[in-house]
Image 1: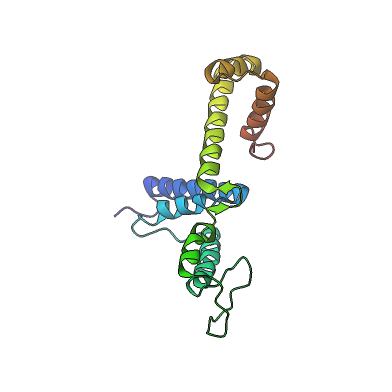
Image 2: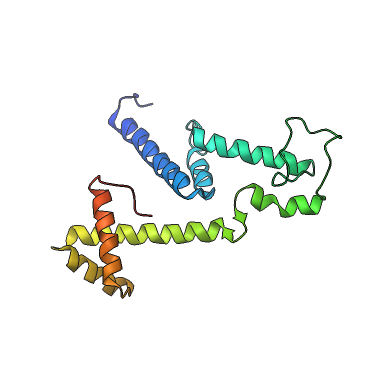
Amino acid sequence: MMEPDHPDVVAARQLITDVLTLYQREWETTRNPLWVWQALDFILPMVPPAPLPPWCADYLRVVAQRMKGLKAGLDWRRQPIPLIVSRKNRRTLSDQEAMALLPAALGLTARGYNAFGAHSAHQRRMNNEARLWQLLTTHPTKAAAVRAYMRETGHTDPKRIMIAARKVAGFMAGRGKPPP
């Protein structure tokens, strides 16, 4: 077993912190629960598992409360779920209706929202920004990087790409928020 201050152990701890920080930032920015599930999938296979981040525990607490309500036939969207579910609480959902609400209870769906589609779109945007950053660091000017990016992606609006390049460059230089 390696010592806790061994460079490989220190690097592994830093990697875990960096990955969880990224997932937390994405969760806080998008509120997409797939970031929580990615974090859980990242930490749970570790031996021993990394501690459960508080932001993951908060999400699981909300989901557990909703699931408890669904099990009792109560719709959390219409009434608060009591701490103790008893017979005096009026059952409003059939078992089939409760099952149909499961994706919404997990935060995966809502009217006009699909967490999987939103996650894919966000991932594409992040990949595009990473590629734009690579081009910004390998081309002599921002304009040259934007032209190269437009050739690669087929985008036709240089003004929009130039604005994105400014945001990406500013963020990577430690100024401002990450691009949306």
